[in-house]
Amino acid sequence: MTTHKQIVSRWIDLLWLAFLVGLALLPPVREIHKQLILVAIGAFQLVEGSMVARLPARGRAYSVIIKILLATILLDHTGGMAINSSYYPIYYLPVVTAAVYFGPLGTLLWTFLASTAYCSLLIPALEEYELTRQGATELAIRILFFFLAGMLVNRFAVEYRRQVQRYQILSEELAETNRELRQVQEQARRSERLAALGQLSAGLAHEIRNPLGIIKGSAEILGRKLQGSAPLALELAENISSEVNRLNALVARFLDFARPSPLTRQPVDLRVIVDRAAESVRLQYPQSAVQIVRHYSNEPAEVEADEQLTEQVFVNLILNALQAMEGQRDAKVFLSVAPGREDGRRGAVVEVQDTGPGVSPELREQIFNPFFTSKKDGVGLGLSIVAKIIDDHGGTIQLENHAVGGACFRVFLPAELKE
Ligand code: ADP
Image (cartoon, rainbow, N blue to C red; front, side, top):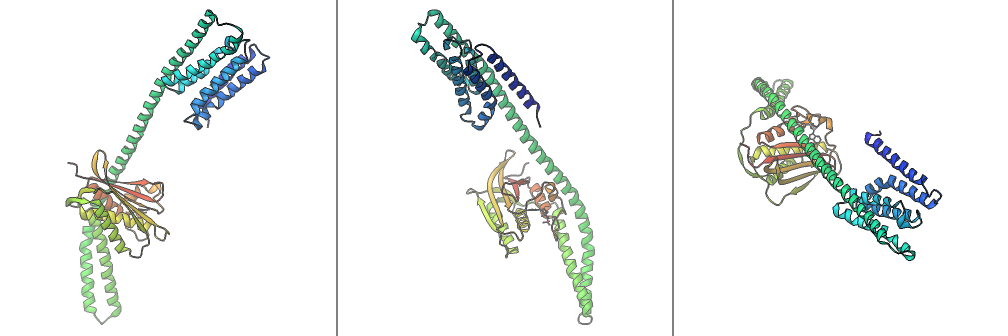
């Protein structure tokens, strides 16, 4: 699509070409070299932008040099004596270009070079004529005007560049603030949902627990009474009992999630906790071929936290990573632990990253919802429990997009709880 800016710059290019055509139509019209140089100036003006963009380091200097050369050749082909040519203002072109691209010192230097190039045209003239006082004065005036124009344009260009830089910084800061705001909103929404669902599941779990106890007790009594007499009924009673156990475990997890867990905070080194979590996952999945890669800082990542609950956080995250990469070849989990800061608070940062399929943008927020699962036998409480424990510690958890692919959960735990 053509933007407004592109249309304006095309118009300016056309105007610029029209002025060059005007110069071409003025005498000496039959001087083919003059016309060719004007074409070269026009063509260079059109490609200059892309050349400077492609060669950011030297493109600007090349551009000024080329313009000084073209100006000098143009003067050489217009007017009997090059130094007297009425086309001498063409030197404003390199001077103004330098003023736009460089700082004040650069502008002075390039203007000096342009003036030297102009003065070099004196050499052939001096072979035939003498430089009169009046001629020298005229030359000095012209050169001083080069400097005046260069410095004037440079002042505006420098100020403009400063403004652009200021706006750039401002817009970057604004984007960063926006990003942080979105994260805070995301976390606030998550906390609200957790609180509401926590209360609901706590109520339900309590209600379910009592009848479950009675069913289990009854099934056991039934089993004892039927011992040996009716094998089928006995098997059914055992089924009831084992299914009740399963339900009880589930209810226990609901309660874990819902109960306002009292924290027993003590100084812990998260490198030790994450190691312990990885070990416990290994014990649960002894056959897993997933490689665990550790990047731990040398200095301790110490925070005041509940040892058991934080271990559960990392167990859940590592378990999820393992499950996401099930059956995948060359699967890896990267664990990194280091002291860090967030929002001006001191603490530690742990990243659990895998090489699995990652989380699609649509699911980014949902995965923290209680009971959201994409697994056949998942419950969908793992990440909710993780988020809740981290919330209770005054920390944050974010799912980050990483270049390697896979999911990367970044956990920040503050060194001390905010009062
Ligand atoms: P569950 O493990 O029971 O499904 P969780 O709350 O732990 O419950 O996870 C919720 C969902 O988040 C998972 O079902 C999965 O879709 C997604 N998820 C969590 N961790 C990862 C991961 N490391 N890679 C890809 N998806 C993940």
